[in-house]
Length: 150
Image (cartoon, rainbow, N blue to C red):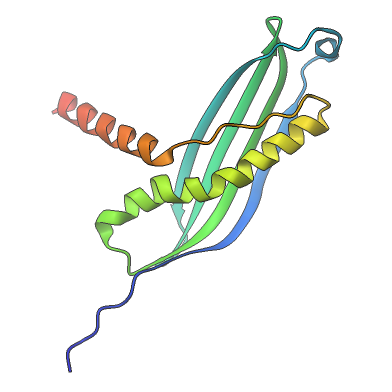
């Protein structure tokens, strides 16, 4: 009997907020007309926990300025523990760099919205992000950088 190929397994086993913060540098922001400029930054990090588990941390930072004054800085580190078992090696980068952040983003988006509202600011709903496109662009940029350094 031929040896059977193990079936690839991919599962989210746990999701949690690793860290979150809201900073309001000055109360005078509440006395001005609200017309903010937003600066939104996203990043993700993968850490191998054991042979089959990875912790992915999606960091979402939002800085709002109103009338040239910092209104708030909101940040969340949304984490998940993912099972990746018998996944082909050439697919792991895409899964960790695009698929996992895609799964985590709605949770991070909710936390940002919640803490901004609790800070007594108008609700902030972040637009969806195409992590597949962002991952592809980062891979292309890494290739360009590698060719430039060769």
